[in-house]
Amino acid sequence: MLRSLYSGISGLRAHQAMLDVTGNNIANVNTTAFKASAAQFQDTLSQMTQAAGGPQATVGGTNPAQVGLGVQVAGISTNFAQGSAQSTGRATDIMISGDGFFVTQLGNETLYTRAGAFDFDAQGRLVSPDGAIVQGWNAVNGVIGTGGATGNIQLPVAATSPAQATANASVTGNLPSDAAVGTSLIRDIEVFDGSGTASTISLKFVKEATGSWTASDANGAAGAATASLTFEDGVMTPAGGALTVGGINVSLAAIQGFAGLTTVAFSAQDGKAAGTLESFTLGADGTLSGLFSNGEQEAIGRISLATFVNPGGLEKAGGSGYRATFNSGVAALGTAGTGGLGSLQAGSLEMSNVDLSQEFTNLIVAQRGFQANARIITTSDEVLQELTNLKR
Image (cartoon, rainbow, N blue to C red; front, top):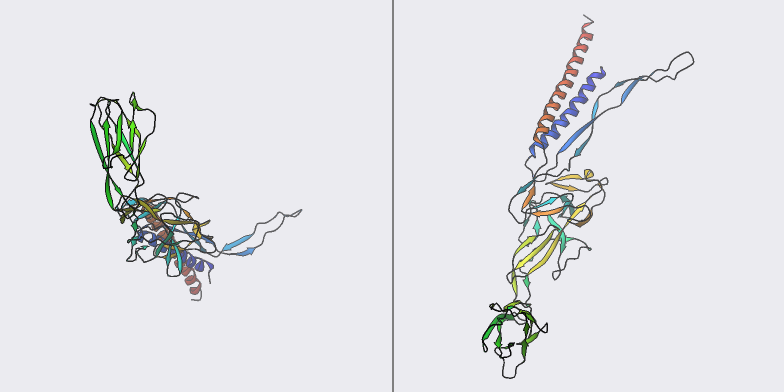
């Protein structure tokens, strides 16, 4: 039989594979974080009809003569180029800007993906649409240890921020140097005890005949401690000043004494009531921070990312996931923004990197290649027909 007949058949098979790859790319043009593939061809073994001959004294050398036996698919490579960003506004939609893969656990298998369309399940775990659980490091008392083994990222919906007793408070602002003798100013602030119960302490400022101000506990009994505040050109002299009010150390060092301004007030206190988790935010390094009803912000966990020596060696596992192979190398886990890993962006998803103009061009190339190889078969058939007609 004619060798060209089988060469044409191999061409049909190879170009059919190219059509399959291109069709899959076009079908996934709107798949989140899909990475396009491309088929590469190579020739098959060639039949030797004449070996090469070395040059002799009286005869020149000859080149080998070979007849090729067709084409085959050398491989199908994946293009891991970054896809465009699509803003969704959902806090649980996360995009990797740069290199890296999310690590997920589906059953007993570890998979890797760049599709960050996540959500929380009934147990507060961060999961992908097919139920794979996102892996990372959970915080303990607001501290994240990234050196240990990863686990399921879980939002503690019942978490509370513990109360903290007020130990220190501070006063800032200005006491008017031109105030009349005997002028009295009272300033209040809400403070908390160890159980989170709120109460109010009051600080009283009185202008003295000497030109200084006296600060004292407005609710204190007779003989309670006082502090004398003296100013020179608006600056407290000597610097510093503190007073204990209701068992709380109140700093007065930031008070000034210029004329015409009465802005003295409590500026801060370090106590807080207990709070419940209300929402969360995602940082560029993958840290999930919980926002509590008492105004506190505390780390909940951090999403881990993985990188590979050879990402092209990953095996597509379906569901926009990949599994590691012998040729991809072992996954190296790390934090976003470090070790060559990209940063994370909440509220966005990575779009497919399929280039439709290129894919439609590939369709034309594959179709014409298929037609040309089909022509090889029909031409070979006509030659065979001529051979059979020699008997007539």
